[in-house]
Length: 262
View (cartoon, rainbow, N blue to C red):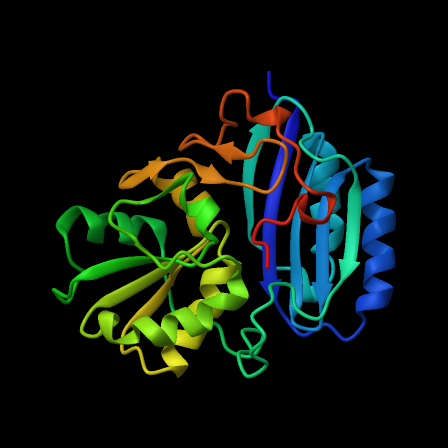
């Protein structure tokens, strides 16, 4: 029987009280004995928490009382044990570091495509306008090695802040195509899509909710392998269950619970 509920979520929204908010979130999560990581910045929130289902849902109920988080969308997955060693609530300059201040998803969200629509496009081999669809992996190379969309573009970046330079080098390869950027939970591909649009890529969309939401809604068709996650599970399959034996792998403390690392 599943004993633990894991949640991942992010929201780009202007936060002008991050220090006060950090203290409140720390207190509320600790009181419910939750573990994982919550990142706060002026551009928004990124979290990955785990604990008893009632406790997790109670925390979410409290968080959504704040109008800025009322529409927070959450990805859920089960596990038999809590895959984090501690609770970390941090304030950072960016909730996902790109080092391009002009990219402000809290002000304008990138166009998105839902999981079911992407599945249909991949099944038929083109989008609804007849354009070739390519998937672009915005994750780090070692994450891609665990699994990716079949035929996805992979520029073998070592960290997300390397993405802009890689994209500018390969921009011409994307001309005339519908580009769907994707990542684990949606946060990296959202910034990536905005950057590509600003750089002149004609037709670019982010995969809404990332791989985790795609697995949840489609069962993982067209995705080969597993999805790397930054907790003790290490990888989850198309059913969002931990890969066999993965829970024994240690994750560096500063990366535990971060769905989409820098």
